[in-house]
Structures are given as structure tokens and as C-alpha cells.
Amino acid sequence: MLKKTTPQKFLKVLEIHLAEHCNLYCFSCSHFSQLAKEAYYDLKEFEQDIKRLKVLTKGNIERFHLLGGEPLLNPDVLKYFALLRENFTHSHIWLITNGILLLKQDESFFQTCSKLNIELHPTKYPIEIDWQRVDELCKRYKVTLKFYNNAKIEKNSMKFVLNLEKQNDIYESFTQCFMSNFCVQLKEGKIYTCNICANIEHFNAKFKTTLMPSDEDCIDIYKAKNYEEILEFLAKPIPFCAYCDVKNWKSIGKWKRSEKSINEYLI
Ligand code: SF4
Ligand code: SF4
View 1: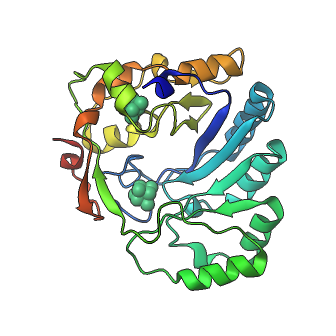
View 2: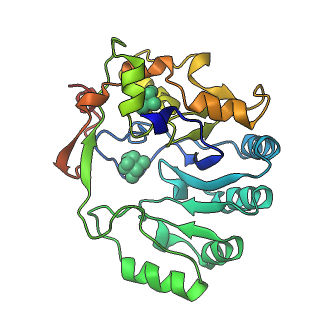
């Protein structure tokens, strides 16, 4: 609990969606990407946001996760890599992908990853992918390849239960939540303490609900005075936590695909 509510000294991880949508439709995705329509982080906006972040943090972010949705659906993925590396020369940059499109990438993809030190950290799902071939390519181009999850254990599906009536205690939800102050996400000039709040728009659009984040649920990087203000904000419960029924989040066993039903998020 103390860890959740203690501001980090600097951001250990910052997640950024390069694509909102996905080509693998997982049950109860915590980014709601199986529900999302095709959309990308606008490249110009991304550049501005990254430059502003560099000023605020003085380049002190340990690691970026470029993900989504499926980041490799973004046709300009190499341009995002270049912009990020240009501004954050010392940070680790991980591409977190489901791997489906990895073998469709051409030589320039692997060469750029090698040159800019972009590491590949795929999540291994129980789907057919020739990982040996991916490994060979990574070795050939000297690209780091390491699975994000434990590749030897079959992936489970989680159920992320929401309370549409917003009736949960925000302190309890926040302190019990594994995402709070950890799965921190940058999206369109704002920073969120978790993926659920940052991406709820896809849930709302699909199910015609109104679980709207307010100005108190995120921090605007253009209004924040300094890095400390952001780090302190991320270590506090937000009003949106009242929607999360964290005590009922659970593994439902073997990984399965989504049927895009609201029941995947209801008790
Ligand atoms: S691969 Fe990841 S982003 Fe895509 S639906 Fe599955 S959990 Fe969500
Ligand atoms: S809104 Fe609060 S409880 Fe829900 S995922 Fe985010 S931090 Fe966790």
C-alpha cells in the first residue's frame, strides 16, 4: 500500500499506445483494445508531447513501453522510434507486441531497432507464431528479444470487473490495484496512473456507457509545473477508481478470445 502511495523518484515505466486497436481480441483486455476502432497517436502530437516530457523530466524516465493495442499496426512505427530515441537518449525503449506482425516486418525494421536500441519484448499468447525465426532475425540484426511474460507458462485470461454505478472506495481500489502508479500511460498530452482510466473511451463507445474520466483523473503535461507534481499526482487515488471493482478482478483460467460483450467486465 505504501508503495502505491509513495511518489516514485522518477518514472520507472511510461506506456504509450502507438495504436489503439488490436489484431488479437483478448477477453476483458485492460486497454479495451479489442473494442477500439482503428486509431493512432498523431505523430505531430507525439513529437510535441515527447519534447515537453523531455523538458519536464530532463530525460529521466527509466523505460518506455511502446504498445497498444498492437503497436505494429501503426505504419509509421519507425518514425515514433526515432523521435523517442532522439529525445530520450538514455532510456530503455521496449516494443511490446503480440508478435503477429513481427515476421511481416522488412529489413529496415530490424536495422532500425538495432541502431536505436529498441528492444523487442513480445507477449507470448497461445497462437501460432514461428518464434524460432523471430529469434534468428533478432540475432542476425543484434536486436534484444525477451518475452514480456513468462514464455514457459501458458497465458491466462484475467477478468477486470467494473462497477458502472461508481460505488467502490477509491482508496481501497487504488491501493489494491496492480496497475496504479505502475502502468502509467501518456495519451494526448495527459498522463494517467493506469491503463483502465486512460482507455475507457473505447468501452464507452462500444457499450454506450458514460464512465468519463474528469480533469482530476489525469495530469496535463502542459499545465504541470514540474516533474514532482506529476509523480505526486500518480501516487494518489483518482475519482475514477470508484469504477474499479478490484477485489473481484481474477484469472479465469486459459487465455481466450473476446466476444466483445460487456459481460467480460461485469461481475
Ligand atoms: S494483444 Fe494485448 S492489446 Fe491486444 S487485445 Fe490482447 S491484451 Fe489487448
Ligand atoms: S482507476 Fe484506480 S483502481 Fe482502476 S485501474 Fe486505475 S488506478 Fe486501478
